[in-house]
View 1 (cartoon, rainbow, N blue to C red):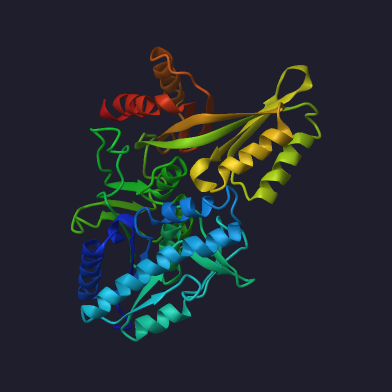
View 2: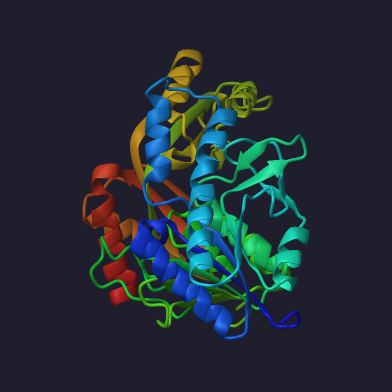
Length: 406
């Protein structure tokens, strides 16, 4: 058994929602073990449990301490780990529930959005060698200062792939309520289709752009040991799913999917002294002190020696967004304008900016549909269009119909 390959299985919140779901998960784990694998399981908190914890915390204050939020939210994954471990033991299989810190996941000190900096999987290896299945609470770790930390929304994916990389697992299976990664959210696009395989870079960009199947940070760990990720459905464990692996150099430019991020905040900034950029420095310092996560930052020269720019703030990754935006208004307006009612829709694919027709067609589609463009960002694998939140679904369907269905 000690020489058998390792498989890491991760189950999301819907897979852990109730007793029947947990029994189904236990059967999948037992079947994997019967197939000759040494199995490590990573679990998320039960569906909607994290949001319930946050709502209760906000009933006391709009700006709860990030440290206490980590203490609160990390308990959800530990509950799931204990429940599944109990179910496995009851089924005659030895299992042990472990917190992230007990599993050897060491992070930095950034509460609510920590990064894994080291894995010490000694306890996991000992359990596997002893014929036991470790069930690890995802989304969490411990800092060098012995503080409990969490890894941000979807952080259980990061836990699973990081452990798979550290243990040199043969495969890391990510189970959710859909059979793999789709070309768009099936709830918004009826003709969205399952993708057979994606490159690491494409999957990472889809996650960054809002697709909820796999956390983008998890792909970073997969690249280290070329860990194969298999996105599957808990309800259809024998389904084909989607394989995420190294495909670099094997593909021509293509569009694989349309992702969306419903709730973002756009900050528009006018910097009067462009060379010294004191306003941007003040904003960066403010974001650091408030623990605010921003992305897609861009600046360029404007009229009258003014440097114009923008920053995108994802609402779901910033638990205290309401109170922070209020302080931004007090400190930085009118030089910083806050656009709250925004969404982002993104085309994802290899070499997508190598050909200008993808960008041109996107802009023409929105122009013809009379949908305003609030902002635009690109990378080697993504074209992101910012628009009004009320028009987001329309843009997703428009892009999918033009770039994928046709």
